[in-house]
Length: 119
View (cartoon, rainbow, N blue to C red):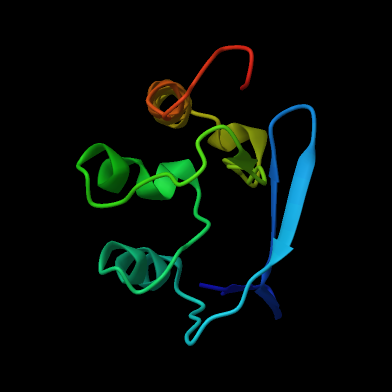
């Protein structure tokens, strides 16, 4: 299911395994600019979605979704924590950052086929 990103539809998916890259163009009978709607359509069986592991880990681990090709990784999507000024880097903000790093590391280790050499 294509997902609009910025001002264009994300209908070109790229996957890689560290040695090769595979790309394909996708189409479907629906698209949304709401990533959670696309996730819910996939859970409902309405199609295949290319989503961040952070977005779908709970669904995969609960058996609501399946990773179709675990040996290929989707395009990386950065996760950024932004503060307008250094003064905002308070202890609570730093603790939040540490929690996010810990949680993301844990979720990454749960990816089917995870190996330290692939990530």
